[in-house]
Amino acid sequence: MSTRRHFIATVVGAVAASSTTGAFAAEPASKTKDAANVSLSGRNGPELGSLDAVVQKLKAGRDLPMSFLHRDHPDLTAWKAMGRAKMLDLLHYAPAKCDPQAEVISRRDYGDYIREEVRFNTTPVFRVPATVLIPKRAKRPAPAVVALHSHGGYYMWGREREVETSDAIHPSLKVIRDRGYSGKAYGIELVRRGYVVIAIDMFYWGERRVVLDDDPAEWKERRMDMSSERVKEFNNRSNRDEEIVAKILYCAGVSWVGIIAWDDIRTVDYLVTRPEVDPSRIACVGQSIGGLRSTYLAALDNRIKAAVISSWMCSFPNQVARHIRGIGFTKIIPGMYHHMDHPDIASLAMPTPLMVINGTQDRLFELEGVHAAHGKLARCYAKAGVPERFRSVIEDRPHEFSAARQGDAWAWFERWL
Image (cartoon, rainbow, N blue to C red; front, side, top):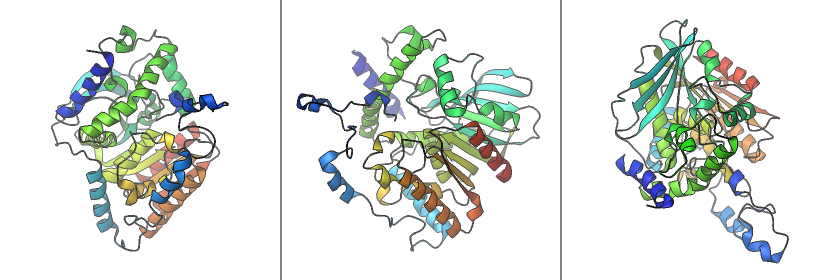
């Protein structure tokens, strides 16, 4: 079987049984003969060029019928029930509830905390790898945080951005941490603050990445002596193939974002079975697509009592003309945006305390849309009667979850949990 056919069969098998832009950037053509080589990411004008005017007319208006700000929704409880039902329907994925059948693979004592490597089922088919950090000196049961890893165009490792899974770190992963997290695996700080921390690998990342039969051993084994260039080659292939995976999932009748959202919900299902965890004090946090995951988890799960979204909040209509390439298939809920905008989805978490962090240097998002989204969330929380439970942070920073903002997030959790 060819590599491509085997790749497709690998993904289809998993589903049947149950984005970043760097690799695609195109240089503008300087001569007519080069015009065919210019992609939709050409630098001048809107992404769709001559078709943009038509698409702009297709966009949903600002007065979205399922926004909590719409005049037809005076009652928060009734609106949440309706909005969640619509969102769950449009995820096109509703896996049967199952016994997690959790298994501890390894356990190591680090003095002030214990690290467990765990496997558990999120569906009858998907068995996910997780890292659980347990504070040794915290009063039991302790509060817990679901740490949700990012995309970053980096697929070789997943949850290792947030937590240590071994005493070694690949140089390429260190670059990711340095660039996006001030060099921190922030789960370590959280566990030392007294939180139980759990992090899983998303579908298609880390231990759940696609590995082909004829891949080199260093890719299969994730060797620490593998060059950063070889890691980059793997990541570039995975980035290019996201579109194929999305098409396969859609043809199988599910959405990629549905798989991600339900894996995170089922992670909470597992978390509340742990005797160390206080089920009434669970929070979630994520950077980039981790922020999107935090949005959806808080929106859909009442067990989340505080949430932080870093570097993933914008009004979607503002993204259409020039900023759509950062919204990949892992993030889109088909059909949702004629009912609700992205900040409307985040407001489904109300009255859960929510902190949202964006940077004005973040080129993934159109800045006017960032301000519009934060403003809408503030108005939603005010209408719900809990304005103090929303905090907006927009500052002159790039796409990152810096040490300073991490400190703000941990203070937010301490306030509300």
